Image (cartoon, rainbow, N blue to C red; front, side, top):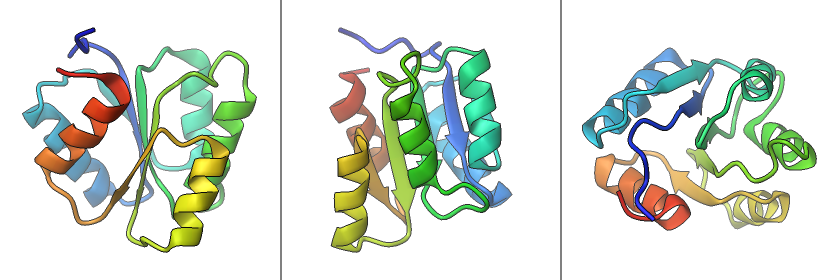
Length: 128
């Protein structure tokens, strides 16, 4: 199944620079409907009010971390099937394990480029 480049993607990060970088990478990959949230609670509200085909979230955020956001998404019957990619600067194995246990679809360690993002998205969503 081909991925629809018009699908809505939500990027979540408390650093505006990172939001801009991910938005630009997604645009390079042909995606246009990109929304953003600067923390987990804002992201959760947007997720509950709109349909997103993918969430790309930073791990380290306050007050709600990316891991807590992921757990909330997986606990919500309407949202639990939403593909979720976690972005982090840390590649500690306990973080990867915690994210996998919480139901993360894939994991990206910063820094990364469009090619890395695309390969992670393809593994979660299929070819585009």
